[in-house]
Image (cartoon, rainbow, N blue to C red; front, side, top):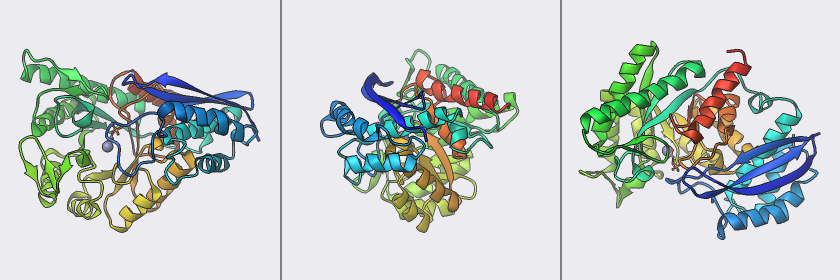
Length: 399
Ligand code: PGA
Ligand code: ZN
C-alpha cells in the first residue's frame, strides 16, 4: 500500500488566462500531479466547478480538510480516496469543495499510485490494447469565439489506429482549413478560438463545406479516412423552445431534420449535442434516423453522470458519450459512467475542456478506458500536451 505522504495545491494559469488548481500528491516517494480544466459552454448537470468563494475558497478547503484527511490514506485505494472527497464535500454535486478541486486531487492520487507501482497511468488503470482516434476542432464558434459560427465546433476525426499518424493528419486538416479560409476571405483577419480552431466570418454550412473538403483532400494525401464531425452545443442557442441561428430559428422537430440532413449530405461521422440538454426524446428521434451511420454523442446531455446516462440508455437517446472527468469530479465516478456506457454498447469520447492546462492526463485515460476517440483539439500548446502524450504512450507500447 503506497500511503499518501504529502499533498500540495497551487493556483496555476489556464489557457484563457484564468486561475485553476494543480495538485501534487506524494506516495511511495513518487509525486503525481494533475490540474483541472474549465468549460465555457458548461452543461446544467455538471458538478459545480468551484465553491461560492471561487478558486481561493477551494484551495482553503483543500489545505484545511483534504490534505489532512487524505494524508496516510492508501493511494491505490482510489474508491476510498474518492469517497473521502465526497464526504468532505458533503453535497450531491461538489458544491462545497468544487468539482475542479476534487478532480485534480482524484487524478493526482491515481498518478501517484501509478508512479509508486512503477507504471504509466494508462497501464496502471488496466488499458493499452488500442488507441483512440483523435478528434480535433478546426473551425470554432459559439461560446469559444467572438464573431464565429453558431455551431460551436467543426472537427476532423482521423481514423488511423496509430496516433503518430492520426494526430498529424488532423494537424494537416487544420492547416488546409486555414489555406482555404485565406482563399475564400481575402483581406479578412482570421483568428483562433479558445481551443485553437480557426474563427472566421462564415455561415454554418459554409464552414462545414470547408472542413469536409479539407478532410477529403488530406485523407487522399495520407491514405486513410478522415471524417468530418460537429459539436453543435445546441443548448447554447436553444431559446424559448427554438434553436436560434443567426439567419433563422428552428423548432425541435425541424432541428432533428436539419441535423439528419447534415449527416446525410456531408457524411458526418459524429455529431455531439445536436439538441438541447433536456431533450432526450429529440435525441432518440435523431439517433433512430441516422444512428447507424453516425455517432450521436451526449456531452451536456449526460454530463459524464451515470444517472443521466442511464436515463439516456433507457430512452435510446444516443449511441456515444463524451467523458469529461471534471464534469463528475472523481476518477471513480467517471469509471462508473464509462462501464455503464460500455455495457450499453455506447462508444466513449474522452475530452478536454475549452479552458485547458498542459496537463496530459486525459491521453492516459482515453487509452486506459478504451475510448473510441479523444477530443483534444488539433493545435495549440495545451492541446498538443495531450496529443504528444498519446504519441509517447504508443512509443512505450512499441507501436
Ligand atoms: P466547454 O465545451 O467550453 O464547456 O469545455 C466544450 C464542449 O462542449 O465539448
Ligand atoms: Zn460539447
